[in-house]
Image (cartoon, rainbow, N blue to C red):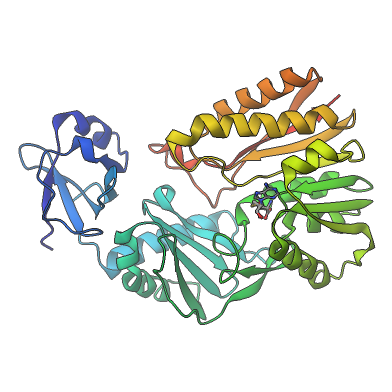
Length: 385
Ligand code: SAH
């Protein structure tokens, strides 16, 4: 192993010693002009002590660290990391008879920045978020194929960077089980790796409350929350999304779970418009799970305003005594900031609002204690009076 060495300025050593896995370009002393995007590099202090190994990138995060040592990043390296990731999931009973879709790798939470791997039944869907990870796909694939205790029929590569990954996918999706419900993850046409498995536990919570209730699932995508509510005996469920394709896939989920359609209605609409025009006080439970309003720090202020507006509009019209599940999946909006935003929205409406529960991503989306930014999905279960 003979990776180029990047020397750090003293000011960035503190964060590395705290095991934060990102090195920002401003903290680098060396000239980086000879390095290529995605190349493996070692980082060192001014005395040439090696402090870690990672992927180089030309953006503000210049190095994403895969190890805090001098390490060879090869198939064996990935195999060991992946085996550890699998053991962590098995400890929390994933996969199980009822649930055979789970996140095997959650980026920094599994010491693999830039890498997400979701498993759906016998398929592993590898999503790479950096050039370095994209270039390492064949090593990762090798690691996945040599895992102890799990066999994959297909290893799919999709990339968050445009036009990378396998250009022709061997299969466009697969059926899988989540808490005994059947879904189809369509990674060719859908978002993320084909399904939002991060809402598994929150969907189960909705299911436990929905019997006999009228439910609005806003930003429903392919109807994950709706299926749980219908299966639990909800009186009616409305799934609202702006995407026709997502709603169509949602209708297919009804059939796959043998649910007759009469209690369900798909509404194709812009959510903000819907909440400003429609009668929302029909519903006993509303779910608001919008897409990430802010992908970067610079967009945070605008995103906070958007969350506030959406939630205020919903709360203003909500039925007295109803429940609201409200979420944010923007990484740059911290749980505290989100709760303050919802408080500001509540204040604007003058309604009595109580927090019944704080909601999170499930444990197969672990957060490194040294990288709290990994906690991206946060939500509140509120009662509106
Ligand atoms: N709750 C879903 C995931 C939501 S993803 C689940 O459990 O699977 C966010 C969804 O919001 C996407 O399906 C997207 O089509 C939809 N969306 C984005 N902007 C919207 C808007 N303005 N109005 C309604 N839906 C919107």
